[in-house]
Image 1 (cartoon, rainbow, N blue to C red):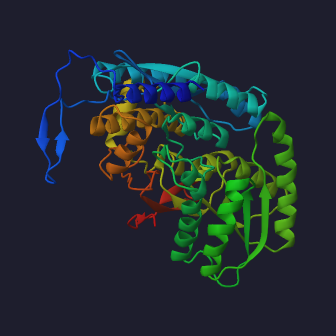
Image 2 (image 1 turned 30 degrees about the horizontal axis):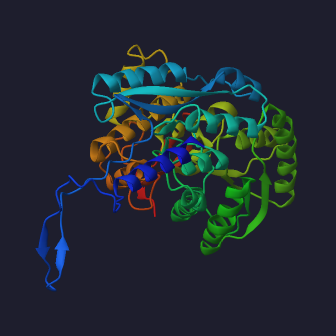
Length: 457
């Protein structure tokens, strides 16, 4: 790829600058000599400075930044049966945020030129085709300084960018498919408003146990997503945390995520089977360990038809208030994203910088009538503003330098999505604390308990 060719060219240039031969120009003055401590003559001469390696994505006074944007979201939501969800035009949002950034000096004094990779949410495509196009867009057709997105890249996409030395900053707060091992294998990835699946699992169990949700005599079931990361986080974190809390799981059902429109029928059928299995096991406490909220939607729709109503537990990854809005019920859990945990007309309180983002994208507020639209807007503001903060901290540096700059920010970055974010060596997801979420039948909505938020371990 071009990244390898660029690196090779830099190495060759530096090597050439340091090469000396015996066929030196005789008119060149001989170097001065000084006496070394050993008494032997030591040669000294004019200091040489190796040229700085070029920064990927920088071309003159332009710095190219990649953005992943989703199109046709409303149609995709309708096909999945989700109602009352509105979204934003992500490409237009990128243009507005980048224009604002450039008006304030861009990145390191250079003008940001966005490079878009569009994904059609309704298209039925081969995942490998998407991966190849994604990789080519950001590493071959265009060399970009960083890639920014409102959702996490796939394993193959992360590998492509890592190989090219391109840092990826995402804000996939309510949706995550990355466990601790995934972060370890992707050292150039940062998630502003997310947690690893292992941290979600242990925090969920600890939070529920802390309020006595696992009452003696109850029967606990787990409904989770099935993929490599969820499998690993379940085995490595969720089940051990439950065991430590003295909980025996009576039924564990794993269902693969919806990867395309063709999967909707399969998930619906498997959700109905899961209801029967949970009923047969006598489950009266059901813990969701999934991401995106589709699994609870299908399961609870089937459960209602079969008069199965266990107490529910979930985290922000299930989009608690969206679940309430679509199914009319909720449960108890942990939350770190008010936009997905709580109703907009309830006790929702957003960070001050959230309004700055909304005003930038639509001062009328008309675009932000649902939490989904608001969450997407804040995600794009956060990824751009965090890259700006890293550049302010370290200047225009290579990919590893960008990540080091973000880690060095600690809790100094002011987020549009969260009251507090925290980074540090090896901690490249920003969530620093969670609150207990409970369903209130009086308002048919979720509320935060008044307890002090709990730090993420």
